[in-house]
Amino acid sequence: MESKILRVGMADAKVTKSPGILTTIGLGSCVGIVLYDPIAKVAGLVHIMLPYSNKISDNSNKLKFADTGIEILIEEMLKEGANPKRLISKLAGGAQMFSSKINSDIMNIGERNVIATKEVLKKLGIPIVAEDTGGNYGRTIEFYSEDGRLLVKTIGHGVKYI
Amino acid sequence: MRNVDINRLNEIYLDVLKELGNIGAGNAITALSTMIGKKVDMKVPTVKILELVEVPDIFGSPDTVIVGIYFGLDGDVKGNILFTLDLDSASSLIWNLMGIEAKEEFDELEKSALEEIGNIMAGSYVASLSTLTSLNMKISPPALSIDMAGAILSVPAIQYGEFSDKILFIETQFVEGERLIRGDFFLIPDINSFDLILKALGVEVNGEQNS
Image 1 (cartoon, rainbow over the protein chains, first blue to last red):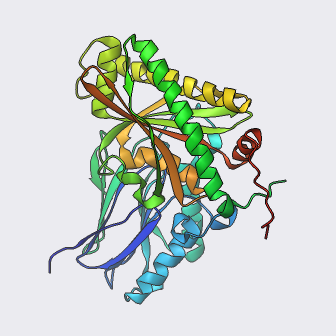
Image 2 (image 1 turned 30 degrees about the horizontal axis):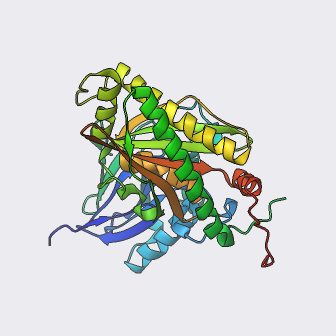
């Protein structure tokens, strides 16, 4: 079977089965959260922009937030045969794209996104097996559901698998 | 305290930002023309409203490398301004300002020239808005990033994302000599400041349909 590449946009999520590939291009302060059941080889990727849905007045798009985004992604993965007890996660993104001379609360949104993501995953008991977060540069990621590798590409900061 | 219904506000919000953006961008380009000492022909700025999911594609692919120059906005009105350029446009500006052809990777001098151009344009953008609204606004020093479009544009997308599923920006195109320069302005007042701008412009926002 040919590997199908599914592209995940901003505030978007997709689920695939082996040998499908999930990608999100140009992650900045957003966080790309991969959830994976290594036995069923079901993978999901959500591209979140903000930490918690209850702190925002307009929260109609649930995939914008770490808490509700992860929740929905898990539901979709269960439909494809993933077992919630077997889920592991990999994270990338959460950069600070511009220097911190400017309004710190907004500038730290990348870091706040990563912290919220970790809190949510911890509460759900999903271990984080790899991450490439922070820094001041963008990332493009590709997740291979066949073997669980996550490729992280950058401009001038290298290419690696985590 | 804050009793503005965000969803209902969306239409008024976008209209007002559109008007402010037009005026601001016009002034910014006049300032640029003065700076490089050449006549610059500006095309009518176009206001674009996109769904958040479409934002990373503004420059084609989200991994297209672009230049972003970012400013904090402080005073009565708080928020941010982002000015983005594609690499060709950035090279054209450097050529106009410094008389040198930029190489594929910008050096420190060229980067600070870009920051300075952004500084002058954003400064006059904000000055015109300040005059219009009689509100005090000042910009922070510029911060520059040259990276994937998706990553740079995630910054304004997130800020808009706090109160809307849409983003608004002003695309300006100007021609200097034979070179076309395209730049996009993102003006992002925070939600409380937006209230203030509306009041300053005499727009009634607390209507009868409060639910």
